[in-house]
Amino acid sequence: MIKIVRILRPAFARAYVRIFGGFREKSWLFWEVILPTIFMSSIIFAYENLNAPKVFIGFVVLGTIMMNFWYNVLWGMGSVLYWEKETGNLEVYLLTGSPLPSLLLGMALGGMFNTSVRSIAMILIGVYVFQAEFIPAYLPYAIAIFLLTLFSLYSMGMAFASLHLIYGRKGIRLNEVMGEPISFLSGQYYPINVFPTVIQSIASLMPITIGLDGIRRALILGEGLDTLWIHISILSIMALILFPLGIYIMNRIVEKGRRDGRLILRWI
Image (cartoon, rainbow, N blue to C red; front, side, top):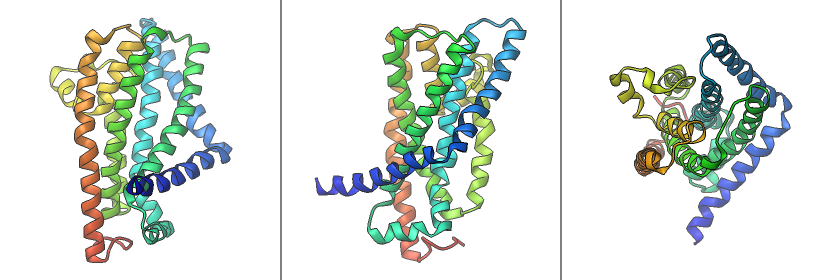
């Protein structure tokens, strides 16, 4: 029980800072809601001009929202240890004795909450402005897939944070490399069945691809558990693999950093 409290207290403390800090700076609401909505609008207008089926509007809305979470994993969690080290906060965290996975858990919870609030705003814009149509009856399936997807994505974010801790500024290049290609392979604005079979197989190795496809099938196509059990099973397996893997990588990096005396210094 004491160990659980030791893990959760710093996590909630760090989540508190991120949640309230995210609403303190009003300009962030503009950058994180209005600007993605403008880009989303351009894709929707293109589909409408091409007389594409109306379901594509919902595809675009859900794809834009899920990519917000992906970028939050890359920049809001993957880079966090590097930025904390640059500002000198990492030393303070280490002196408190709090485990670094607790810090990342707090960043993940705060990032999920802030991104979820902004995503709700984008859904409302999609429904009331662009007339996107969703099927509320299948919302429980979509929520289950959504939560499994987030768990897997933020477990990956823990591994990314470890790499940033090693490589520092060079790790930012990893974020840049994994941004647009993942957006393409995940089918952000279209179903992945437009890809050749080989590319579909590669894209299916990523949790966001499986999760986004499952959420679309539930909320837009009205498919039930008889189809979605495949998505839920794959995401559950990914979660069971990625979370322990993220913890393992983090612990090994911290152990090596402490042994070599380079945890808060540039890794060379």
